Image (cartoon, rainbow, N blue to C red; front, side, top):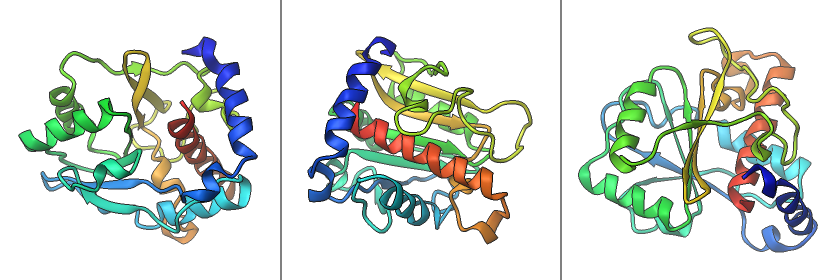
Length: 220
């Protein structure tokens, strides 16, 4: 994967100056899941992230994300899905099957732990891909450099459990099908500044990292 980085950047630069994204606004699907976890949190994350992307890249985005369940027939219209929360995450058997199909057919999942969903999310994803394990992403990976450079990996937004943040990838036949940002809370960092009162430099780092994740999902 790392050896493909120069090629991917070249492709990105070609797309970046083209009309490709201008023709179809980029958005993500927020996954509505069961189990009692607050899938609906971080209400201003994508409003701000998409605005930041429109102002700092040539990517044309929607105004905000969409919300769908995994069983919604429109899920496959959108290449990027997002899941976050503080508590329990629970997929039905049908949802497990649908998420696996979505990711194998080219979809990408960004999961962001708001603090408290880790054990539940890992449990449910093991049902989706029992044969796969999460791999910690090296700092040299293009997801940390595709637009903004993060030589030390994910920025630390919130303290949570203390210690450094971690970025994990789930790979199928060489393609990253899911990215899991843990012990940082990129989503909170992208919210309106008065919600969490993060310093401007932390909030900007979160918006930049969120941009990298979306761009990587689009070009890999």
